[in-house]
Image 1 (cartoon, one colour):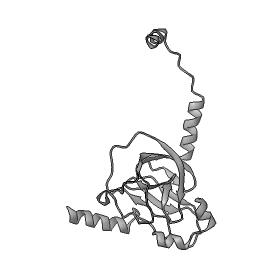
Image 2 (tube, one colour):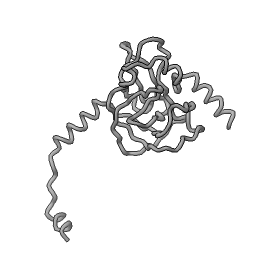
Image 3 (cartoon, rainbow, N blue to C red):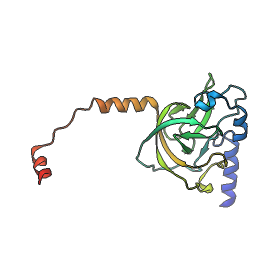
Length: 182
């Protein structure tokens, strides 16, 4: 079993499950990078650190945390302040105009660094079990950590907000109101 896990880890490190390294990213740091929306074009291989789950999941937490997707000064992708462990199959790339895009491995939703996104998951300071990761978490990408779930795009969040604003309240039936008062 350990040999299979080691082989899978080696294959994942060679593929899109782990991209970039903090050292490479630090060389490209700029005021735009600190702002979290664009990075210098330079070498297309210099991408923020993306770590994914080692295996697909079939259940996720139902909560939806909102926050901006940013790249910190160490080249670590964060949702708010938490370093994200992305869903299995997630991948990272640059768009033609140099922005950094992450495609969620569950929904296929593409999100850009700098956008407000929604993501289910649990965050904490406990270091994730390396056997559950497709690649290592560099020491520079410290706590808090977030086991991310499916991603909701900025446009989908706006649509959800609009539906909430336009929702017609449902009146409480009289029999339920009597129960409430008792």
